[in-house]
Image 1 (cartoon, rainbow, N blue to C red):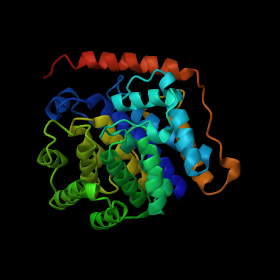
Image 2: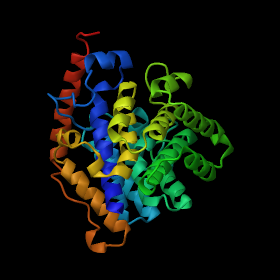
Image 3: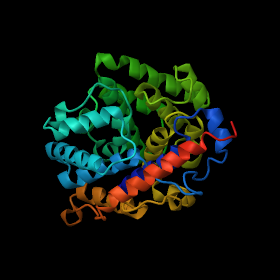
Image 4: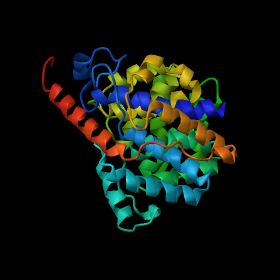
Length: 353
């Protein structure tokens, strides 16, 4: 059962990321006109690729395997992975993440390398942590904090990432979704007074979901008027609102969050991870998985990584190694990806408007 959750979490991240990527940064109206069929990939002739959202989720998964769930070693391994990830010339790097990794390279420790930012980086890394550590709220806080403070020191980033991790855990362990249960547990795990604003936003997301409001209406109500922005206090409540409404319906949830516009690769990745942790690979449309063209970290590689995390944390030492891949191919892949993203940007300049 746990293998299903880990695999579904990583593959759900990849699918949500790749479906959402072509819609990133454009308004819902423009997105629906450029790419009206959200049920297929649009980056490369009906195929899709993943961005840093999936790459970071995989770095966390690899760090969990290599550390065997030991906190300090996990922190060290994740910092090491981020440093080497930057040398692969990734096409998309958030400013806060870039600054933080450069600080890691010049010797800052992982608990002091983060910059003041309330962006989405920690939230996209945290679903797999929730699946792994959610049975202990203490461990959940500690691992999410370790993952967050490497790149983001703003407490808001931690609150949002922790909520995402908790949602992924609840999704992986409960056959039905309950916003009431989630609100009860988020109040237990987030006791800081400064988290009151965030908890209020989560309550508003639950109330909006109970009324059946579409997520774009909720986003506008909380101040995100041009799609769902990359501010974590916009992103996470909107993702939770869709999750509360659709539960285990991977397809309908992903389509709505992507068509809401804004930071769509990240909102798609986070929601895909949360729902994927419940439904597993079998609950994700096969055409969406098969439409992802990735190398050297293929979809099959991600699936094997999910199995490795599950077996490692369950104590199967013989399965505690990360699956291998052709590391020099990362730079080649990233250059191809950069070309495709630039070409896609030029396509957006053309009609229909």
